[in-house]
Image (tube, rainbow, N blue to C red):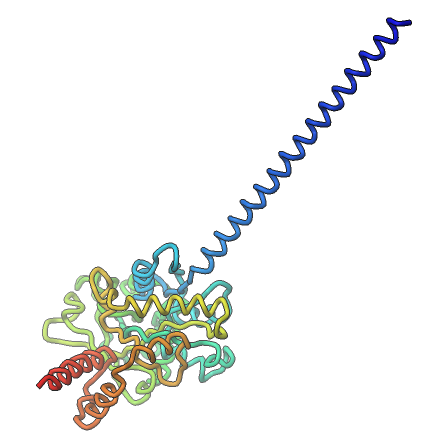
Length: 385
């Protein structure tokens, strides 16, 4: 009996100790799991904060397609302004200035884009995108982009293109819409086709089309690659009254395209103005603040864009120039207003131009800016005497 009782007590003690050990083990596992959960939550929290920080500091800018200047310009913006922590500029390849306007209005995640002043004016006139003047604000006028019309043998002027197939660039591009507007304004009816520029040059050579149109800043790297043996020529565009409101007179010279324009000759053309635009976000919203951060960096570092190895087109830009009929993004206007202690000098300069008649010969904001800088230096030298 004692033996049986002893055995029972032994079994009870073993079970008790095992249970206690198991309970202790479970408690340890539960504590470890709680710590793991806390660490996991902390990791998620850190990840969320990092993701939020990165997204708060990124702005996206739509460029045009690879045939134009704007893709390189947006990459310049990224290279100069992107510091990785406080601001990152993310270039986005767009389809061109016409589609960019639609994408600024409608596409998620797009903060800004490069378009053209005549495209904005067109949509404002037609109303097809709604009240666009209240929805889009410009940050800065940029540079002029010239219209290039390349044609094959037998085409001397625009009238020779009547009724013939002409490439207006890719569908939805700014080149397409601007070509339509210019040819309509000049009363020249052609058969529009749409393709890339390389395909268009091949089509001219084999006689399928008569000409192709490219709107980009001179000198265009694409046009510059053409050789006399290609048999193409640049066709002049007259700057007549129907084009006065939305375009500027421009010239293509031998220095621009030595393979296509003989020395001492020039080809008249027209140009439109590239514009950096943004959706007109309400003040102090997160999206507004992101664009405002970009504006501050862009304007503060503007002189860096005028130096090599940045693109030469930057030297044409006067970011303070106004886009008539449009509202500047409020943060950009505030920056410009705060940096203008020389307002009286600007007014004196405007009067100087008006009375001297020198404003008649200025073809671009860049020329006006250059003359203004010279005027400021002259006025400062006068004050010292």
